[in-house]
Image (cartoon, rainbow, N blue to C red; front, side, top):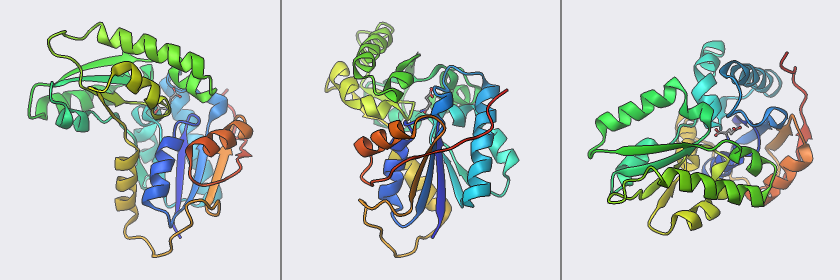
Length: 275
Ligand code: DGL
């Protein structure tokens, strides 16, 4: 059985884990929520790199993972190059805002992107955006909206703040919209945001399609792992799924109960703190 390590700043990566469990049910998973250091989106690049390194080291040394999924756009943007240099033999799959998919499905060519400040300010995101703008079949206009505090509100399960922030940021994004060319596609560029998809969808209206990355990342992970064994796990069983939190294991257990088909009780993970 192959073991897949998955991590995020907190509970957001469960949106990716959910897709991984559906796509690769025969694998074992170890999920780390670095909730003691969430949110990553407003931290320095160095802090995100150091936390990502500690988590990857733990997953390699203690769990002998076969592949690492960085289920966090911010950590992918800021730390994946460093992780690949540090672990040259470990296959690593990252998560990036789905600009390419959005450019393909948008009919108006006007696409909103919600993500953390860390992701949107990164060099990696700038390169991705220019690449997609240069190669899209039609002229594409991205309206990028940093959403300070939104991942944190979702992390805390604070639904009223989540709603208020979604309202605030979708309005701010739409203030930059060209009234004759409305946004018809919205990229959820942070793995926490699919857990606010319902409210975002209500706020944007039925003419706007939401795009997230869980399923494509799960397919990519499957391709990296190679053909699976024939063992199919009961999707409701907890065997082969370990949840670890550097913050509150109870909060991770609750979030997993809400958002995952598999039952699992989270344990506490202690990693060396940042200086
Ligand atoms: N879920 C993460 C992401 O995809 C991080 C959010 C945060 O911690 O700020 O960017």
